[in-house]
Image: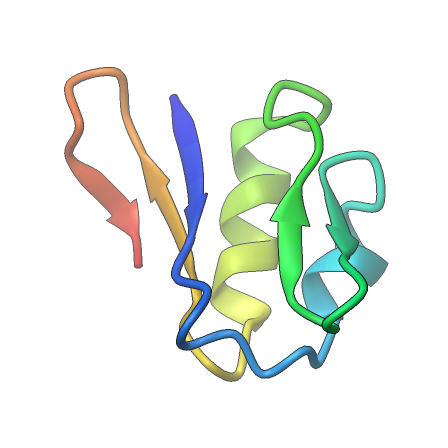
Length: 69
């Protein structure tokens, strides 16, 4: 599993940080970064990605198929 951020799409809303603070953080430009994509369950990662109003979070399975994004 892999979590990626489409930085150009990130609007800095930080819903993902509220849902999974061990996985996501805001950088100095108020863009989300992944700090540890193994720090939460797949279900929580999907919840965070679906909560993103900008659609900036991509969750992929081990084969590179997008589960959310």
